[in-house]
Length: 289
Image (cartoon, rainbow, N blue to C red):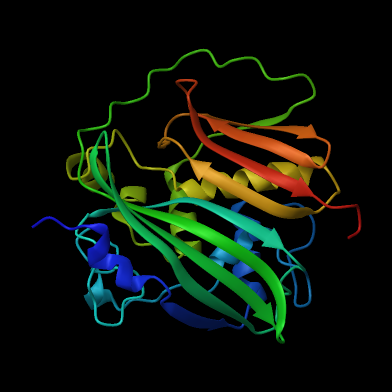
């Protein structure tokens, strides 16, 4: 059966509200996962960007999970459209900070589906959903975010990246090399309550979805890039955007780099083959703001 945009346009404008106590416990788990320095976050502290991804999590019952670990599509209470495409990816986001979320203060997230489209790509049909979010505490707007979620058909097996020399860093760039391993991927899946098996089940990722290893979460790479900025400058991040371009896999080093240009930081993550896997940008506010 062929599906078109019009099959799912009725989801545009659909809303969902989620409440969360914004407990310090989740931020403390993230603090340990990412080897943050200093005292663990406590009640009243600002939540680092984009750690709000560790809150307001969907909690589908175990019985409602599909073979891949995602909630089954087409459930009566599902918020997102029931696309027939089996592969789902969090492909990008654009976040603006009005004021930080504070730990220990209950918050509300309002989600609205802003756009739905189906397009043809090199790997087959692709379905795109754009979701807008507003995060408030005590009725005050704290964050606004727009996320891009992509669904695609199964494609050809993905070859393992071939190690290559990475291009030289720009003068003055901040950089760090990380080695995503199974422990980090497992902990990030736990932080985001994400049961997608491509991140922790190697036989499934390779045999069923055609990857050469475990897939590094795109948002994990984005979180590490934001951390690089926080470690390199005292100026706060007031806006953060990212877009995934290619998958990364465990077992290979990932070079994170950032280049400050006025109030904007240009960011990228390169895999061991030298290709750019994720690009991002951060806008900085004044110190102490």
